[in-house]
Amino acid sequence: MKKVFLMPMIAIAMFVSQVGAQECAGNTTDPNAPNPSGCNCGYQGVKAFCQHGTGCYTINNIYENLSSDCATLVADCIRDGMVYTGVSEKTTPTDINNPDLSSINPSNKYGQNVQCKTAGGTWRAGNSESRTSLGCCKWADTDKPGTCWDIWSDDPDGEAQVTDCKGGENQYWDSACPNQGSGNCPGGSPVLKVNHAAGLIVATHGRALHISSDKKATVNLYTLAGQQVLSGSVQAGNSVFSLMGQNPGVYYAVVQSGSYTQTVNVVLK
Image (cartoon, rainbow, N blue to C red):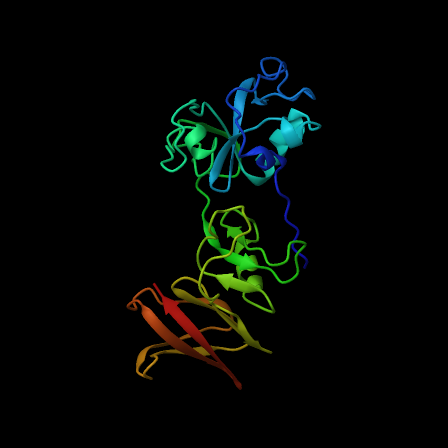
């Protein structure tokens, strides 16, 4: 399945001064009213901000967003980020070499690396504040080749995407993508590739082996020196074999089911 990623339009003007922009005339009566002249947009009558990736920015239709109405810009943030109100804004400090991240101000380029919640904001709509990254994936079949994207815990098919990412020509990291929403990939080599054969699929995720087999499967875990440290089995079907009791380190697991055998590298943190 080809992966398509939509970037919110509000992110375009992230590095320009937004504190001095006028308020949209419709903010107190109709926050979704078109405001083609350029202004800060509101959510339910209150000035709105968008948490997108690692930045917190004013939602406005100035500069490149000039032709977009507030309804579109707010909807973009709800789809791809989180809408906040009440975020603190200041005109100082201005030293970009020593950014103050407690508010939106010139020193952090008006929102770069600022968390809306930490800056006094209240979540109003969009993605859940409690969601976590299940991993970072560079999808081989995507409209943005070479970019990496988080797989989120609140995605209905999140776990299936993790398994999908570990297969084929995709690349998977068992950690969140850096600068979330930027498309950047983690440093170091990707890990946790799926190894599969007909009747047996084995994937590692966190401190567990995810095993899909037509028959009962045996599992043996070894150190790189060949010392067996764990053994067990799972029933036919889809199973999770826990590795929670093992010390951090690099291991390999040998999974056997009928005539099929799979060996996978395991990195425990």
